Length: 442
Image (cartoon, rainbow, N blue to C red; front, side):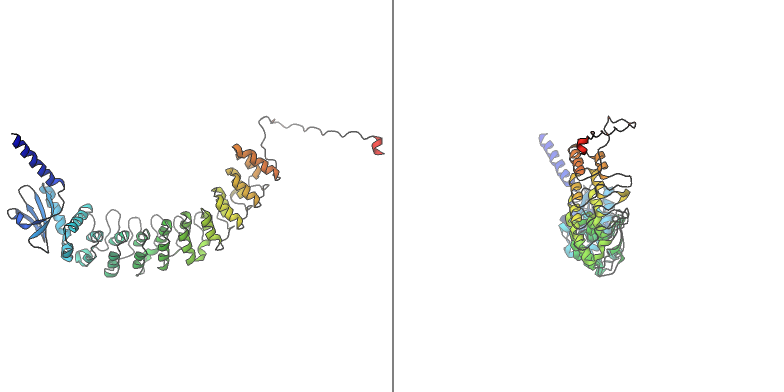
């Protein structure tokens, strides 16, 4: 009985191992299936019914007496549909590229077919890097097809994978369309811009296409994408290929995107191609790239090329207003040292000093005063800088701030104390001067 039990356990282990990975590709001989029933056949793909399983074989085109076992399944209901799928989709690959078929490559191919059942054969060919298979009529017929979920074409996929051979074959050999967009309205140029491979851009640009300046659902052209990611060389490659820096997106023009994400190399590349880029206004605020600067380097990049330091946005604010509001002290100092007007009134008549007072930012306040900010200037609400300081300054800054303003002649800025009477009172009479004697007159 013990022997019989061990035998059953051993048999169960063997069967379990057999079906642990039923899709593992193995090389087998056809002689192993001499006594098995050949149930279905499609070209070189054959389905056998053995005593314990349903086996799908791909007859080796190079060795007629051997085959690749593609799967070994226990249920007919699973085996038949998978056989139909493999029989239909494997044909172009073993007909065009028989020399490439080995255990590893067949395993990758069948894994891809099972992982992406909705992909066209052209998508599968790109994923596998089988550029020679593009010549097959079945694959050529779906060369511009869109994937079901995201909507990308085989060329989109080749660009994402940076497969230059596939990109070249698709563009030059197959003449694929370059203007097809995916579900996010991104063209192949958007996909290429996400990579750091300029050769892909250059291959795509051998044929003129509107896709190079297409705006995606996210409000970006390929140039915007490259600027956001900081791919300066890709920016230059796109510009060489007639990409336009004058297409507006969600964040404005490409140079605004470069400024927003502090990509100095991209901003420099745009300015090298077209210096007028530094005067472009974003569509929402009317701010120039200088308004969007976030650090000293980005500010200097524009100032050294002669941008207008006191340019007013739609709200009437200069870049200095923005830097003070955002508490970007290094940027504010660069602007002040390059002639920014500290007394320019912006929204609600506030000067940069008014904004600094509201922030209770002592460093910015001192810098603005040193560069000539008028402490007596009133905004549209009649507020002076001193009054704002009295209302907003807290903690240790408060006394320092008020003393500083008082020392430079600011208006009385202390707010009424809590014990000050609310009703008007008569002012005390001035003290009388001492009487003058005749001796003093003489």
